[in-house]
Image (cartoon, rainbow, N blue to C red; front, side, top):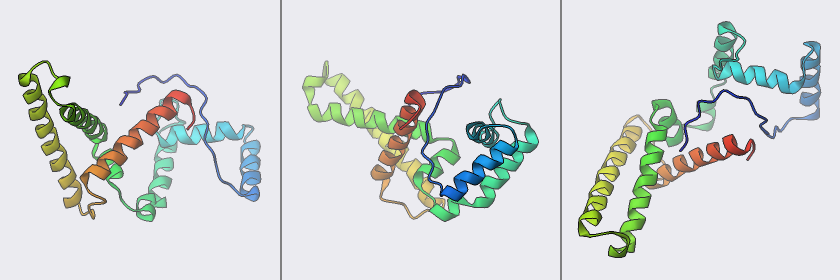
Length: 175
């Protein structure tokens, strides 16, 4: 997973599903302010994400109050991905999961993928530690009051896919 610290703007594409009436009202709202719809959405997103290009602290607060009041978490249920992102450990868990999968792949190939038995044993030991760390982290999710989802491996895979999708979007500007 990549780190993104660059604040340089580039075009991104999202698909919005709006009724004709909603699309018309959005255009009217933007036009009444003398801006394009894309600018209106950009400003809202910058406020919602605490961007350095936001419209100020009050606007950031109001955008996030709106987000919280919509209760998307309650509407769509709580998932392991949400838990991982909210805890601030999502990237760590996804990276560790990828390392574990790579180690498993190497171990499944057998001795031909290693310089010697010592290297193979080191990878096996690392994989066991990573597995244990991920199991502990997943248990935190379950103890946090979650149902447990589809099991640790399926949920780690979903988290990893979420990060891969985000990376693809950041790099290409669209999905």
